[in-house]
Amino acid sequence: MGDPAGIGPEIALKAFAKKELYDHCRPVLVGDASVLAYYLKQHPELSLTVNVISEPSEGKYTYGTIDLIDLNIVDMDTFEVGKVSEVGGDAAFQYVKTVIELALAKKIDATVTNPLNKEAMNAAGHHYAGHTEIYADLTGTEKYTMMLADGNLRVVHVSTHVSLREACDRATKQRVLDVIRIADKACKDLGIENPRVAVAGLNPHCGENGLFGQEEILEINPAVEAAKAEGINVYGSLPADTLFSKANGGMYDIVVAMYHDQGHIPLKLLGFVYDQAAQKWEAVEGVNITLNLPIIRTSVDHGTAFDQAGHWTASEASLENAIDYAIRLAENTKQAQI
Image 1 (cartoon, one colour):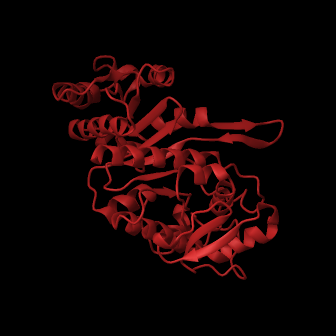
Image 2 (cartoon, helix red, strand yellow):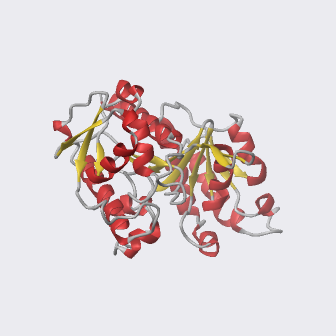
Image 3 (tube, one colour):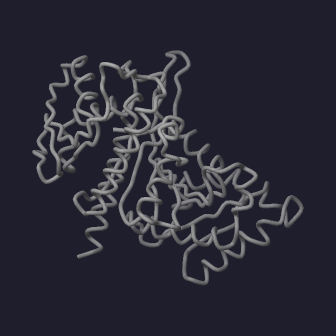
């Protein structure tokens, strides 16, 4: 459900209200029944009922019914939508913890997360930079990375939620090589047989042979050569200012970005479309996937949008994309195990 004060409950209801969801999977929601009741009372046109269950095996999985694992954390008589709160932060964390436990126990095939608010979660005493770090910690995963995807463009990151100064230090040969390997495997898990992995440079023009920096010469290019020696179809380092356009056009299957904004900005420029005349977002698309976990995790590629919460204007497109990716990964994983 995500932070119950944000748009997560709203877009979840919009997604569950579509029959197509049930044609492709058996969805179960983890959250709070009181939150769903709050929104369903305002939108009876959805004609949805809630079936509270304690285990996924108890679900009905029929269109028109939301099978809900109710953690009963939020009291909507006192809870404020659209506000940062410790209750909302704790609820969001407990929802995520629950789905991770269900996936590790193989009671579900994949997990899909709605947005949480980092300030609220940390105020509640759960000290993580975000979903990615929660998943890594609770699954005991040391080598992992975030992948963003929208259409033809897929991006993985050498570093994410650290300062730009620290991000430069994290672009080491070993870390870049690890992420190249993860990127190659992720594409294969998605059914791409011989992925073309492109590696972005850290510096402008990949450092111009050392004129603008040494990182490409000392760390990034050696990682690329090591990956080639392992048989990975990898290219780089390549100037980031043209690389993402090429990848979006289909020249490469995935891009290894060196830091958070280098990968996030081009992806969100494509997926997020704001209509100035209408004063609203026309599209908020894209998927966030945590790679190299022992379980499948996909997510929306946007935040809690507290300013939109409760107005019933938020788009469910990114959530639907995340669900589609989760299904695709789960199906390919099962096929690989046969």
